[in-house]
Image (cartoon, rainbow, N blue to C red; front, side):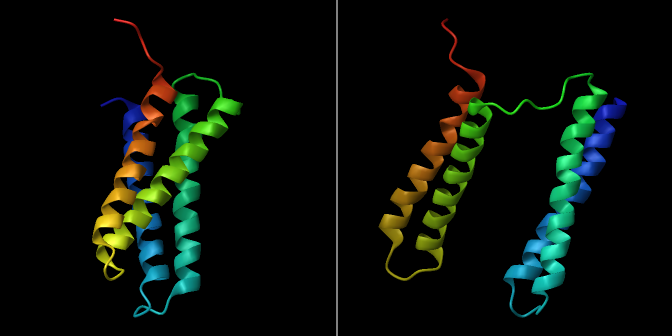
Length: 125
């Protein structure tokens, strides 16, 4: 295993676990740990962001360039994830919204699938 892959593995695992545990602390009222959970989640996000920059540095690539395409792809990803999450809530949490929730969830999946041609582009072949 290459060093950059090992570093990414460790940082991704630690950051993901901290973020997930922090969100559980925030969202489970039985734990009564909203403030420490928010702090732990923020630390997890910071580790994951640091991993992005460290990985690019280890590969010899320049830092991420902020462009209209980058901002658009990020906004589309956030919107797709939120729409998918709302669809899941409609089907599993809210009463009587099974069919509309499935439709909203499918719309969220389609939005997320739109990221593939946006990021990779379409090739003729």
